[in-house]
Image (cartoon, rainbow, N blue to C red; front, side, top):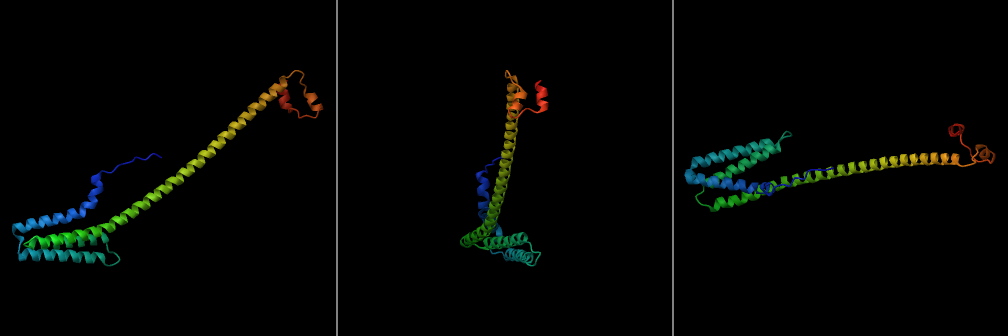
Length: 202
């Protein structure tokens, strides 16, 4: 079983691990740009961001309750709520210490949530690899058994052919011996050739 081996690029390996930090950093940068363009101490902007964050949080709450709750939608809504709240505080504050502190906390929370999904994905990947390896070993065992069985049948057929060839050679050699008499063989009590073989010899 020849399988193509695909080596993942190092960027493809690092990108998922860096995604939470990139997301929170992007929100912080955009919030500070918004702060520099008039969001600082703007009550209207703060109220707007607070209302959006509360709406996203409420949507996440509704999406997570009940038997029909969707964890993906709920997680997305809560992440949006947190990002909006973080952007509102970072854009409204007049200094960097509070936005940077919130950035550190938000990044830590994002990595904590992402680690949970990474563990689940890793467990699923390991389970899939074990299942695939087990199936591969099972198929290889079946192939080995079938190969041994076919080899035994071939060897048996070959041995039968060799035996028939040796028997025919022995019969022809015995018939060609000088002074060979089937009657003498019968009188001596030795096994004699069947009638059909005697007819072929004569």
